[in-house]
Amino acid sequence: MINLNPPKNGKHYTQSEVRGKYIDIIDLWMGFCDHLELVNNTSTVNFMKRRMDFLVEEVNELHQALDDDDTIEIIDGAIDVAFVALTQAYHLYRSKGFDEAAARTAVRASMIQVGVTNMTKIIPEKGADAGEKICKPEGWEPPKIQNIIDNHKRTVLEAEEREARAEAG
Image (tube, rainbow, N blue to C red):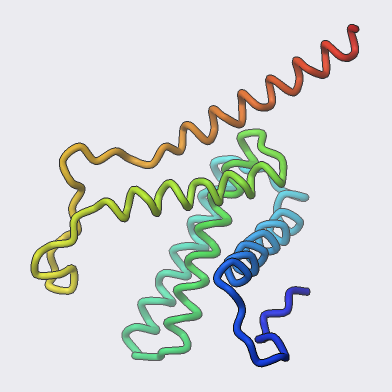
């Protein structure tokens, strides 16, 4: 069990400790979902669509919490949406042949790719709250998710080649 309570010596966690605990929680969640769902299911299109139904349900609950101005439910709903969405990405990587550890790493890499590209978007002069859309700047490039998949395939092939050479020689 991860201890998320502050250290007893009254100090605060460092950013890297907090980041590590956050990643640990995501890893635990993906592993838990792996245990619950991939044991009995494969990540087929129907499975992924069922997961999308979960996401829609969570988004609807978040909308309701916003309408009710319920701070606790808004936070809970936003985190639920994030976890369901991350799990969707995780299951997709698993369906593409990534093992548990590789899928977790790929989800983290994807989060970084999407985060970095989103941070390059242009915030409207009046601000996003004014109803203006955050825009992609000229020359904007989408996240390089395909590179993550290609790198995994290359790593697997290289490992298989090394293993074949070791057995042959």
